[in-house]
Amino acid sequence: MGLIGLLFTWPLAPVHGVIKLGELIQQQVEHELRDPAAVRRRLEAIEEARRSGQISEEEEAQAVEEILRLMSGPPRR
Image (cartoon, rainbow, N blue to C red; front, side, top):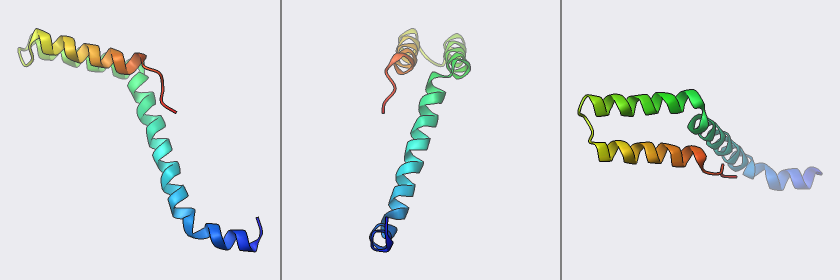
């Protein structure tokens, strides 16, 4: 890339940085969605909420189903 190319791409450098940051954030979120320890904590929190009467059986089933769907879905790229 010569001087001319650098002059034309330099104004877009912040945009490329923001895109890269977004990709890194997406990777981290996907990792945490599939982390077994985090999934276990979420499932335990749902179970505790059900035992304490904060949510109904249907809400518990929906929440567990959503966690499993997110965990088993293909990673987005």
